[in-house]
Amino acid sequence: SQTIHQWPATLVQPVGSPLSLECTVEGTSNPNLYWYRQAAGRGLQLLFYSVGIGQISSEVPQNLSASRPQDRQFILSSKKLLLSDSGFYLCAWSATGSSYNSPLHFGNGTRLTVT
Amino acid sequence: KNEVEQSPQNLTAQEGEFITINCSYSVGISALHWLQQHPGGGIVSLFMLSSGKKKHGRLIATINIQEKHSSLHITASHPRDSAVYICAVSYNTDKLIFGTGTRLQVFP
Image (cartoon, rainbow over all chains, first blue to last red; front, side, top):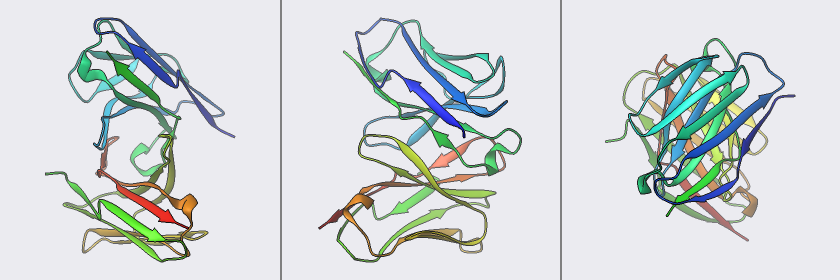
């Protein structure tokens, strides 16, 4: 069966520090991978998605970046965190192909607080 | 204005009540998703549908393409159903548009 792992679960970082959140998927090949952010009291916002190794699409211009060094690994990074980067970050995957008609499977999320 | 509107925003119910959460969208879609977000933050996909009706246990999801409207029903609600329920739609892209969610609390 397929599983998705996301870590860490919680993170407190000072403004200006770097960030690295990692997500891995097991039990499937060539998944579509997504990073979402949920700010307090707001809906989910798509940050990045990837349909293959090294292929990253960015939805929102910001100081965050994403990389996909391996087929089932998706990393969210920042060189310098801003206070506005605080939020709940979720990694998700869907089956390759028609991703918009495939169920999304979410990780447990990372709650990031930038102080 | 969000392209996906959910109602109500907040909902409280007594255990055993029948619950309905509504979702409306503005243009034609390829699929609609219902998601459940637990208090800890984890999100589970409940349904994905493009027409008709789907049922899983006590949960039922319906969609009316002509009216651009979907409903999520919970029969015989239970305190463990307490969560945020999120509607999301896709328009033939890899991008989902999310509603802001309906917070449901079921009291014993």
